[in-house]
Length: 414
Length: 133
View 1 (tube, rainbow over the protein chains, first blue to last red):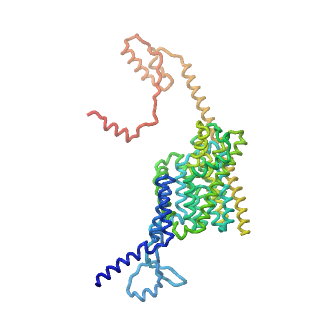
View 2 (view 1 turned 60 degrees about the vertical axis):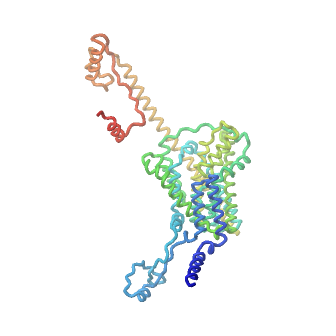
């Protein structure tokens, strides 16, 4: 009988410790959301490289919250410890707390995702992602047509307009800055800015930023068609001039110096982006350039995705704030696209119809998806039109522009 | 809220002005250095073409001389030693018969080099595998 009681108690104990008994209802909803994201990544292939790790991080943290919790340390006054443990030769670290020397005794180690998250918290992963992006990007179209920078700048206006929208909805200025940067359509920049300005909103902002980047082919075309005429969409652009190797090598050096001197807060992102590009264009460090493009980029993407997903716990994510962030993020993205196209129209008029306004929408920096969308919409009107290389100029200008906008927000709101 | 709105407007204006200023500055810098670089490269290229043309003209002006008499002394365009020219002329005489042909000029044939040259390791591997046994 005693044996049966103990058996039942152990079964009940296991059940009491299981997720079924201890998880709040919000976690179950988040588990369903993670299933939806896994579906979108696997079946629809919406940015699967990023969305899948985010979804799995989200799933794991809501199934087992301790996976993202930090270790616990007990602080015991040294004198008290030695009194209670005479003759004990301890090796704990000693720290001073309120003038009392204490032993820092580790009680429990942290979860895996807690340690991976440190790279996000301390702003390490986004610049490394920028390094990889720089190593993969050809700035040739931008150097051949530097006016593309105007379109890259125009698409950032959405960030600052959304900032006001977020203030109106009651967000604090630092939170509004982090929300506005979603309009830059640049995941690493959004994470970098949010980790500095409003780390508590990292989960919803990262998920919103990457979701909208994945949805570029759905969000942008209606706006592009609404703001342009059939004639404008059919404009064929002249071929870009070839860019010499020397120009391509000088570009990252010059941009790094100019932007870092003007906006030191953007130096980390721009510096890494341009370092990656210099490795690519110089051609003398093929091995590390390839590592930055492939292995390093892939490893950081896994770490970044998992740790961002792990911030989306039920309690944090399921709040009115998140709904506001999702709505404002979409607004920011739409405004960025609209201003890009509007400035494209202005450039079209100014050049006597030599610029197709559709390339303006690529000023949001979702590389290369936004440029592909410009190409696709242009080709729908005129099948012999090839806008891809022309759209790559504003597209990569958008990467530089969003890093500059991030520098502005950080320098004012930090 | 009013204070935050004021901050919002300041950030809107600052952000737009700074982002556009920085990127317009980059446009100007890129335009300037692109012009400088392409001008420099064009002038280097023009000088190279000019040099090449002068060299080719000099080679063409050089009168072809019967090699039989002067083969040992002739240096062609200065890059082929006289001994080599003499050896070639002798080889031609041996093959076609004495006095059958006259070697009037000798020039180096252009060797087509492909960009995919074998590295030292590949060449060593190739030599190892194709060595006569």
